[in-house]
Length: 342
View 1 (cartoon, one colour):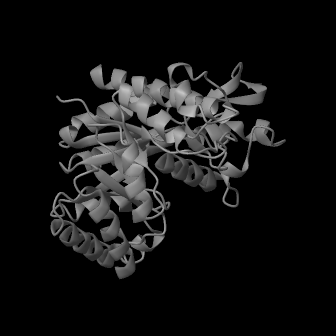
View 2: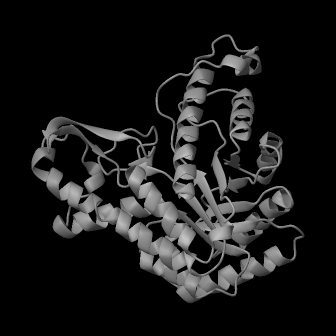
């Protein structure tokens, strides 16, 4: 079985500010490690500029603006402009699903088919992956793709963290109807009496994710994954979300729980292994792409041989923060490769 396409975020994310030297650093380090990159362009013109930072000869993707809605003609037209720029240069484009998909499934399927027709008219068009992001029920999300197996150029992007957090919220709300588990945090005064319920809800994430992967991998179409861990209690992301964590990340508690002052994420390393193995068993095993989507954590790594990229900078603090983030992404890439080879 061939190795999967393995990618990582290729962007500068808050709180890491700086110029394109940060992208050059990411390009160099990802390329040396055999990873492609996923870009985050705001416009087709922006994507055209970002293409210069592709790790050479490696599959790359782009995550398009979140307001592009396939249900709207204007959204499909906007997608087409990105496709024309990416044709022959990128493996795939990723865009978000919409809550409105569930309101009119037939209209959604028609939009998928129309998008497929648009892509068929563009030479060397990249694949388009519709990411699980809006909190649809996983069963419904899977059913959309099961009902349009004739659509060949459009497929699913399974964001395991988004699915997992949705499941945690739903499971916790079933026990506590008026509460959002993600509103809790390690310092919440009520957490010691609620931690068991939180952990029970968290334990539901992995089985649901594996079931979703199993259904979609059976369709024999390419599948794109956004890989990251998370936990409803996590306060760690700069963006205020509960996921986008390393699979090695622990959530620290100010009290002992089962003899420890920390809990692991929804998946952990063993859960990541289960995710990879479930994807491998499907009929899409030769069309899998995995993108590591962990947000930056605070820390610094010396630039070493990459110092010349920043010769025009007076303060390399943010460059070292970027380098530390890249260390984390590459560490998780090793975990994916180890899971694939076992």
